[in-house]
Structure formats: structure tokens, C-alpha cells
Length: 295
Ligand SMILES: O=C(O)CCC(=O)C(=O)O
Ligand SMILES: [Fe+2]
Image (cartoon, rainbow, N blue to C red; front, side, top):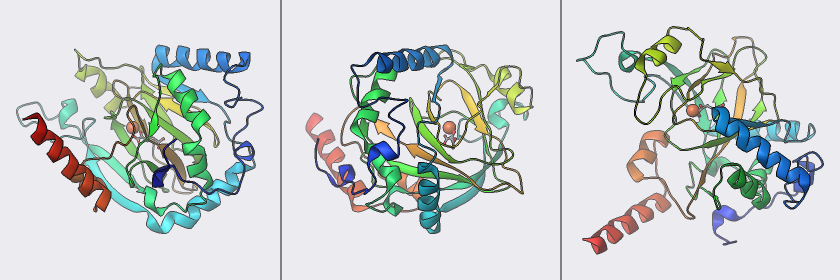
């Protein structure tokens, strides 16, 4: 494993005290139990694009991670915008009630990777090689790597009381999240499996969801400590509004890439985080150079 800054972690807590390895033997990939885990997750992903590894974390790891998040909450980057499912502008040539012209609230915040301490237990789980190997197996990929982006690689998604993340598609092929703090009411993850395909946007189906017709929608009963692998390119999804008297909902979002050393684009980083780091500038320069070579 390359010892880049991003693969360093100095968490004093052994991984076996964070992840339930008795139930989920990620450290024994030759075991029958491991094979069953992979088969089960693959079947779920093939069926509806979503697999949950229930209670991957030990109960005792939850207060540790909740405390960690509380400590880095000062770095929370909050926003409230109105989005359509495609994160795009509306289209005035289409009816006002078209899915593309239907905007709803995306409120909430995230904590960027550079807020995490080098001793972070959440980061230790994010980077643990046997977990990466397992996720790659579930997704039928030869290997995956931690997204080398120093801001977007590992983030906490926060939904405070009264906030919601409305219907949308993800731009990445898959997302891996761990729910750390549950809402007591609301904050439910809902998705419409494969509501669109490469050849068919199915705007009517999307409109139905936007109008609260939940016929095609499934609601995940996630609990704190669950890990979710989700393919969100074709499955419209949202997190419902967290009730006003609920605690904040926090998920740890683990970003991985198929290639090592990937860093986010400069302009996109500026949009998302309001700033960039020298690593983003350097990556952009090396992209420009390699583009020149191809010309
Ligand atoms: O916080 C979550 O559960 C995931 C929210 C989501 O859909 C996203 O971040 O794209
Ligand atoms: Fe999403």
C-alpha cells in the first residue's frame, strides 16, 4: 500500500473494536461466511441497487464516532438550496410541472476530510484494506481505492432538525455510507429502484415521486452502525426531513475510486467546498500537461 498522506491513519483503537468481525469476517476472505456475505450483497445490488450490512459497527463504536463528529462539527459547511433531481437548471421550453422544472429543498451540511484528526476512528474504518476489498467484491470490481481528494474523500453528511435532502440522482456509480447518528423522527432514506435507465429518463415516474406518490419507492430501515452500498445513478432517492425535535442525523460518506490517486476537479471542488487545496491545483496542472502530450 502506498504511504501517501491519505493512507495514513493513527487511530489508537483496534479495528476489531470498531467493526464487528465476529459477525462480518472481512479479515477472513477465504471463509464460507465471507462468501455468503458477498453473495448476499451482490444479489441485493442486482435486485435494487442497494445493499445494507446491518450493524457493521459495534454498538460501543457508536458513541466514539458520535463524539468524533461533535468535535469536528465546527468545520460544518452548511447550505440551503433548491435543486431538481439532476442538479441542473430548469428548462423554460418544458411545462412548469415537468420533473426538470420541479425544484425542492436540499438543506444540510457536510464536514470535509481535512477536518478529521489523524487519530480518527471513522477514517480508520474508511481506509481499512479488508473493508475496501469486500466492497470491491460486492460491486464486482477488481479493486477500489480511497478517493485521494483531500476534501471529498471522506465527509460527514449532516442533516440538522428541519433539514432534508430532496429527490436526486448521484453522479458517482456507487456510494458507501455508514449511518452514525439516527434521527428520532424523519431522516429516512427512500429510493425508487432503477426508475430511469440509460435510454429512458422516465420523467413521469420522477414526477410521481416529486408529488409524493410513493408507489415505486422503498424506505430503508437504517439504524446507526449500518453500512449501505448504493448505486444512485439510476435510482432516484432522498433523505426525508428530520423532525424539528430530533437529534441531527449524521452519515459518514466513504468515497472510493476504481483507479488510485484520483483527485476532484478544481472548479467542482470550489463549487462544493468554497475553496481548493494545493493538491487540487497540482492535479489540474498535471491534467493540463497530459492533455498537451496527447495533442
Ligand atoms: O446521507 C445519506 O444518507 C446519503 C445522502 C445522499 O443521497 C447523498 O449524499 O447523495
Ligand atoms: Fe445521493
